[in-house]
Image 1 (cartoon, rainbow, N blue to C red):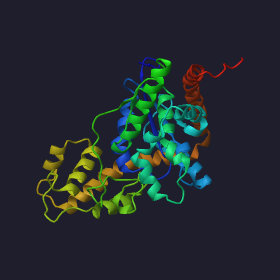
Image 2 (image 1 turned 180 degrees about the vertical axis):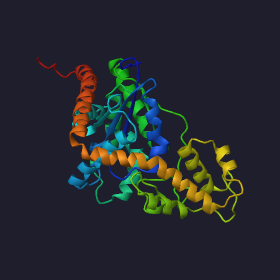
Image 3 (image 1 turned 90 degrees about the vertical axis):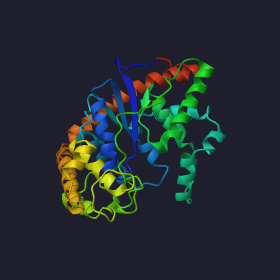
Image 4 (image 1 turned 30 degrees about the vertical axis):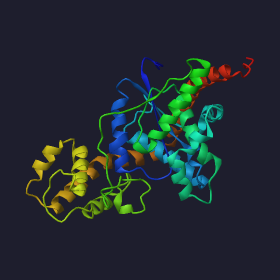
Length: 337
């Protein structure tokens, strides 16, 4: 097993296209903050190389990438303990991706459900990058000798192909890559859409009332919770038959650190109106400090620039270690120093 300074390595990539939601925060980000103090060295990459498989407005992509990086820090990720960097600043991602693509079969990529899904959404731009996307994702993970990757259900297939590619390479060249495992952390509840509680809250939801975005102002947050779809009775109980209320209980429970039972007891005999308002206020109280910090960071250009530079260098250092090993194994001539 690869240990970085005695710690296991965790890698996670985040797209800078789309606004982070309360679901991203409660389901992932908030859990990562506790990880950095545990036994993991974490790499959090703003995966801008992945973003361009879909046409982007360049100035907008740059702006969003920086906003995402700032939001990570504002949400509580320590940029010294964690390596938070831009994927495009570490050329090893692309270099390793090319090498791995020579060890990946077309048939494997053909089976990827996400390619079919995205190709149908962007029928006018089915490019090769969209097809080989899982190879770049494998390179992202294997580049740092990653032990664990937090994956959602939709990415499970990509982690499986990453493992297959790594095992295939190791089978030919010996023990080069650490085989990554899915990271199953403390179970953060899956936060559902406020408008369609059977569907996950998504940063690309067509209905903006379904999602709470981390940068939503307090009035919008309260308004969205007031409009949240529930059911026609008026009892606040935690049940799969009441997906709307169940989701609101989950959100309130995570926002206030109370157990589900405590929440149910607290609102015993109260109506939905009171409950929705309370959930909205609880969410405002956890997001307000993050938003204030984002505003503060946006004024300190030099600080963010410094983090981008230092973390880019740190990521490059570890990436190069893996890359040199791989290049030697496949038979590329050594560099003359």
